[in-house]
Length: 104
Ligand code: FES
Image: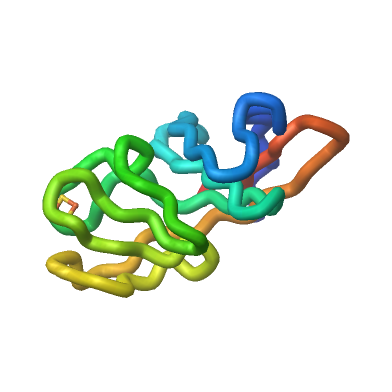
C-alpha cells in the first residue's frame, strides 16, 4: 500500500538555497530547495548519522557537516565519501504553497 502524503512545510519556510529538517511519520527528512524545486532525502547521514540539514547545500549536493560526505539531493547517491550508502529519496508534491512528502 502506498503511504499517504504528509504536509510538512510551506514554500515560505524553505526558500531557494535553504534546507529544513522535517519529521515524516517516524523518519527524519531533509527538505532542500534547489533553484525553486524542492527535494527530500533522508536527514541522517549514512556514514555516522550526522544531521544533513546542518550541512551545506551547493547546487544539487548536500555536504554533511561532520566528515564532508556529499549526497545528490535528486537521487540520494553518494558523490563524495566517506559515506558509501545512498540516502533514501522521498516523493515531493507541491499543493499551492504546501510541501507534501510521501513517507517510505
Ligand atoms: S556522519 Fe556524515 S560524513 Fe560522517
